[in-house]
Image (tube, each protein chain N blue to C red):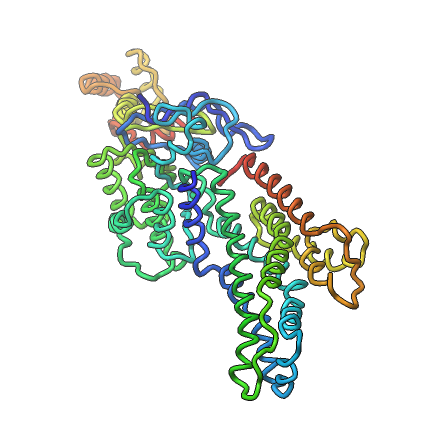
Length: 301
Length: 261
């Protein structure tokens, strides 16, 4: 069962072009789902729809196996969220910010100290949240999202404003919450490098369309498939002839011939043939496309 | 449902802590009585005459409400209602509030209840202020007699209730506008325009149709000389009708809002 699932989710603001064009989001229970896409791809709109912050136009949203609209209050009881910029009362202290939510969730007051400890804000005392740095505000927002010990944590760009150490700390915290408490986490980002060490599943959205959805391993398989071999030679024309004789079709640019992934023996054989044809071979290399590159390839079609 | 509403109300009440709206209520409640105290202490020679008057409390009540009914009460209601609703816009917290396990009905009415309770607090403090404005000069200036007339509690209570009812449409309309506008200046600006309009409409025979006129009319109803056309209709009933209708419209608009944060 998916803990969160959307089917054919469409959305448009006023009469503009659709922001979402049939998003099928499938988040498995216990997973850390990275929701990835460039700015303006539709990540925040999707998450706002999932949380009921936007009125649904077309499609369906089910959370914990039930239609969200039919069970909104009960679903929200088990969800913690952080959408975009920090959402805190700047005239109140960190404890007061959590206290007013504690009244609603009716969790123990002890929980306030626990979440503040978790995000490293236990000693902010009487300092008002408005005087916090952006990083501290973001941490407080994460503490707010965790106050009700949620089963599903939805975090939209939670590391915005955090320094590198802060990003690592939050990443470790989320991994711990997922591992020890079994919390399912949906985390959006526009930077793959930021979340590729964290997530188990990934969804890539671009211009309102889901380009890829699956496990991180599935994405890495794509990475494997996208390895390429580069020959840099002194005679591009003869190089092309040799490659075509071997039924290999590459890209030829600036004296470089880029071929799809080949095994080691094939590479050695091609090198032999090029040398035998009197071609100077300056460099033979394997280009390993990282996840960032795959991401870019996916969104650029 | 009741418990959830109570928890939501407590949460909303906590948000008023250190807020401008809360301080406005406290300062606004004591402002006019403080002016009266100062004026009486400055003119202390007249105190024996004032305190011996048969209608001591009635005159004090009228003096106190003069600026309050026309100026501070409508403007205080406009500002405090707008400020309470604007707490969410200012802090970008509507999205957080709407992802709480609360029904939209609970959110709408608990926030409104906080505004109403703040107004009640304002009335309470103002009444305490009126009492202090009677007692402080008496205690500080020797030779001032204790007011001869007993305090007319029932009259005060009834007038408080009427003024409160007369303020309800202002609160309802300001709440409606504040919930729909991100910009704080919109509800405050419109409120100010309505208030000026109400002042201008006092001498118009249909002035009572403007809901911001009711506290003013309630004050002016017993005035001996006034250019205001005191309506013959029951303005308090009209205020209640306006309050219920505007609140209902506001509630529907809030429920059907497409973007909730």
